[in-house]
Image (cartoon, rainbow, N blue to C red; front, side, top):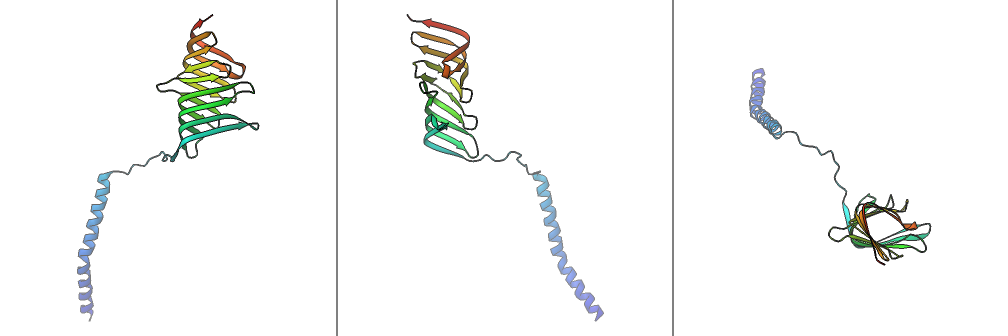
Length: 192
């Protein structure tokens, strides 16, 4: 009987050898395949959060119970969790005081809701900012900061008022007091 068990265990062992050989072979091939492919790259940057596109966008900002900004755009792009809204083909009406307002037209713009800033720029048509006093400011880019009540630009700028046209580079302005400083290359033409 002992010889029979030995023979049965030998038969079982012999029948398991091809299975064990196949497992070892497939394991070796799998390991070799992974080694040939190299390490799988890991992206350290998180995926961008999806953005929402809004057509016929309107935006208003209220401060001290008075609505001061009225912005309309053909299209706006808002990223999830972001404080900035990117605008296309926009017009804005900003109330600076009870007697002074500002109307802006631009091809592109960005509203920073956290910093209460408004940046507008033109691709092919310059930005126009028209004050209710009749003064017109034309530039490729204008930056309006509500908290400090300033309008600035680093590029070329033209100011057109009653009987005067001023060209230059760079602008620092306080709209509520209607003070404008053209920083360099100033050229003024007076009509009288």
